Length: 567
Image (cartoon, rainbow, N blue to C red):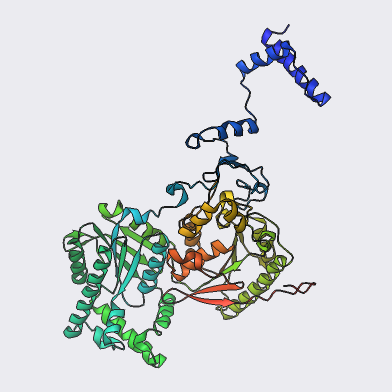
């Protein structure tokens, strides 16, 4: 025997099944209506999406909210947009699973309502906190101080921490001291020593003046600073300034192979311009000897004060950190340590290349995960041929018997990435597979609710968003679920930047234009505000490590002609 509740459920299910079988909406009997009402008390029926949409649209704008994971109310568009929409199935946001699809024909209660600024624009954290930090480089010549300094400038500016470099050697050369011989750096040459001390402190004064300006965060003093006396002067001068932290960064190196490479790179220095290579090398090595005579490595306590320092040993093989409590509580020292944990001084090449042309590229449609065009399908084989040639050249130049790894390939997870990268899996030079990292973080900047639309459609139906794009292209955040700004994209790619810094061998990054611009801006040291303006070449950009950073070279990639004559 069934209980009354079970009986009502059975009656309800029978009624529903009968209606479905007939394929028509049957009029409910009083008994069926009573069963439905009783059942809703036990398990309330969820509203359909259509009913839910009607309820939300009827609410005032300030009260409209949703908790549905696949649907979002897009501020500024005044309508629901769902993954199930026409453009949602073809989304290029994040993992390619879809984003709100907005179509010009969608329901709109009031067009072009401006979103609040906190939703429309991204805030750059480091430009709000206003931390101030002085990084004082320490070490003998050719220990990678200049390379490390410039890497820190690139990295910290990339994160939004306004950073500048103050180099004592550049100041000496600018003031007519270019071409100084090794005797100028002799610690027993008191006149020259006084000049060097004065120039170092002049650099420090310029650095402190830079930090006094609003919005500036980090100043790097690039000089040898090899004695306790010099470091004490620098520390005491900075201590007179309120709110400024100081960290000493010492680069130590005993690895002969690294030193030989650094000595070779030093010969392009303006001090040796036009000089015979052997003569320049001999003079530089004598300069190093003069510095070694007076060199005093950093100690935990100097002049009775605990030192905040980081030691980088043998180009990143070992890292030692000793930060005071005050410095450890700040965020900037953490950013510095993150980079130092990744960079090294070894030679390598990084390649940036666009993925093949997609169907959405042809019609200039935002986002999407569309397939490659016939022309786009030629991109992968052309890149594979280029990589094989590069690896063959590297293998010829390598030391006999050394193990040269195939190029690492990094790409996103969208169709156009995977189909292009498919051709790069096998290295014909090494006769083994290349590692292909398929990373969601390398997908293109997500346009959120504008996914699937053309720029013309955005300007026609959502002119307020079009104006927002022009107002601040760095911090403008696309509306809707997953919408990003260039600033958001920069933070998303942060871990990938550190990964490229860590690599000992070559790497190829396959990406879309937005991601390409961010990587190129980082290695060039381009100001964040100019990232969106960078030209994206159709070929490959090769970045090779030099004494001061990375040298850029553009390489054309020939693409086979298609049967219809296009390429």
